[in-house]
Image (cartoon, rainbow, N blue to C red; front, side):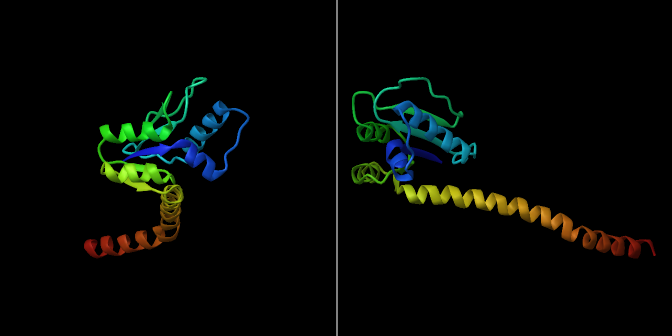
Length: 155
């Protein structure tokens, strides 16, 4: 699934601060990568920042960084929406959400985006924990059951 992120809208929501625009941008990209919000190879994100790139930002292959340059990030997002297939558009901005709907995309409030990623992370942790418990708890039962089956076949 593709996501278009209104970067500064999310940054202000989570209260991320920094001494410079570059520092905030770098920390936000780090936040996205650290929390593995797009860990699935199928998920991609376009992160839209206001303004110009001041220094080089690096990120993983499934995150694309776009700067609005001489227009607002909202206008840049709208232009992206015209050219893309169905995407989730993450923003709390009313105009961005209205544009997303108008072009057939799915607007998503920031809190919902963050909670979905948190749930996905929790589900993965639950799966990992469950597989460890199953191995420890059930291995003797499985072996015992298999021994019964094999013994019956041998007799």
